[in-house]
Image 1: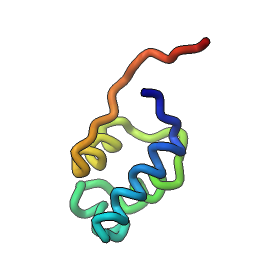
Image 2 (image 1 turned 120 degrees about the vertical axis):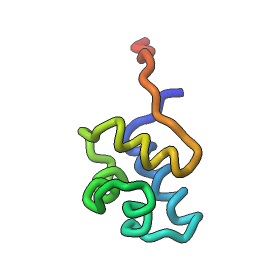
Image 3 (image 1 turned 135 degrees about the vertical axis):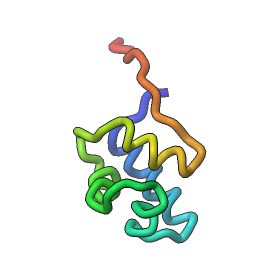
Length: 71
């Protein structure tokens, strides 16, 4: 499944809100900076994959590289 950065931003924001966490709380619990959480939820185009996975792991998810279907 191919996700855009906006899709990823939406997923993280919805998962966080479903757990009633603030961005600060998510940053603390996932050991990333608040600015990173904000950038992730804004759909920033250049984010470190290891940090993205720290946040996603909290929700039981993982981002993995894959080939794009360019058809």
